[in-house]
Length: 234
Image (cartoon, rainbow, N blue to C red; front, top):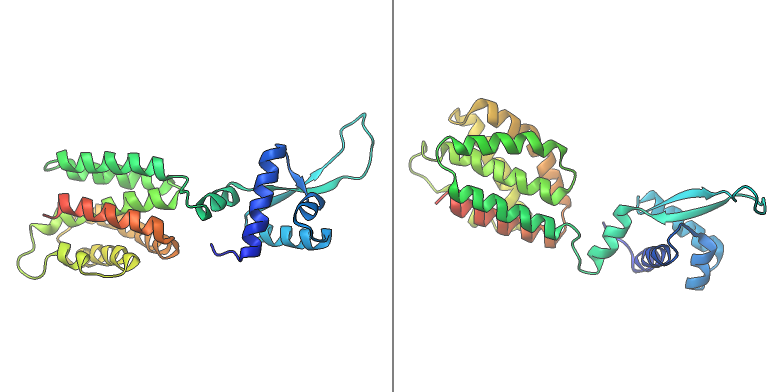
């Protein structure tokens, strides 16, 4: 997601003050910290809320204390906090992704025969519930490569699939080409129809997520695809 420098500064201040106070922040507090009017601060808060980066709530005075009016306060959402980490060069799910990457590559290097189909079924079963785009696309990349593996030996002649993927220059293009190759397999009639139908049912989401993904995550995903393809398609 793109933020202007001003929006980035504003969101960073919201996150910092929220973490420091341990509670939602009133927009006048932000205004005082940034040296702007309270109305400018409020307008920016609403803009960031529209982007899903912060959320507003009402601060109602506790019973027994001074009964003044309730006021609108703001808290950063998980999306907003993660975005600030990313803009600082931090990928929140990187450690979890690295564990997934190592696990998948180790499994691929050990699998034989029908075990490939078993792993494919496991991925297709769990992946729809995965909410993190990078983790979802990593599992889907594995699933599509497993489908390719299932019919690779039945094809004779022509340019190898691994060469096609390697020679596609743009990172997102290479990953989307993988989805296109998987679709092509479904037309050959050589791949298992049950598995290919499930994979194809998820490729639209895969392509949409890849097209929206930032360059750092794309590079991580591309390197994973190259490693997995090296195991499955050699």
